[in-house]
Image (cartoon, rainbow, N blue to C red; front, side, top):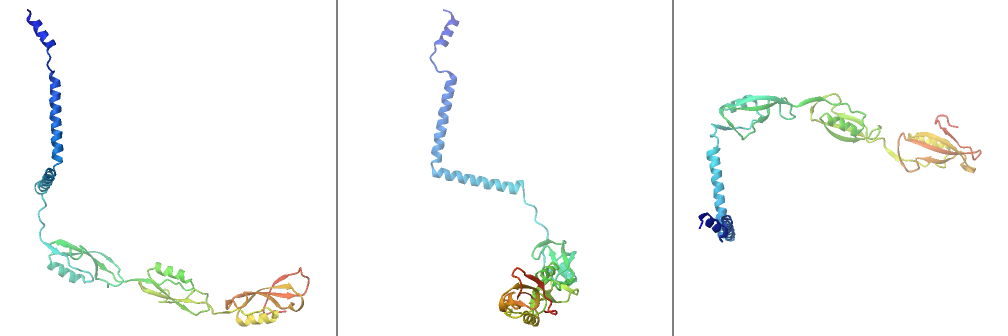
Length: 296
């Protein structure tokens, strides 16, 4: 019997499982067991609690290591001094106060202020109550006092326009209504006077005209043209256009229409239009200007 032929027959005729299949089967069994164990572990509330506690402890330990060892805090600063309130004080007084605290004063700017007198402090940096290293400086801003500006001339302007001009210049505005012959709403007086120097934001008082007094328009219809013109002249009303229109009978020479109508409110100087009846052809209507001093 040949030895080589016997070995080949054993290899071909062997009934055992191949090695790679055996390894795959063992690995699958171990994975299934691990998944089953993990699922059982997650279903246990005590196990979950322990896992969460372990995570918190790990996070806290990592935080302490990073803040204490990897990134340690800076060393504490030297001596600190609180910054006092320096507003409205004189620079000489402020310099003495800061010197006692181990600080210095550094004037850096100046600006106008409506209430704080010139030469006093209106601002500071750092603000009062903050801490500053001994030896550092406090920057301060000094007041130059209230700003002076000339008052714009708004006489004769409409009240709304005058208010806009004054407020744009930094002034406050108050209005007083007064009786005057000037047109209604027109500025007829102001205090202080235009062009005078005033402190911003000073109040400027404006006197605004209420216009000429109003009265009822009289009824002129039925009066002769001459009588109607005399009434209008006595009331200070201005006669505008006088139109003549054909009329029969007693309306001839009489006022048959007027504008504004009777009992409407008018002011002195208002213009009145009249229509006077006349003889002649119906088709002839002659508008004309009437001269109160040259009546027919």
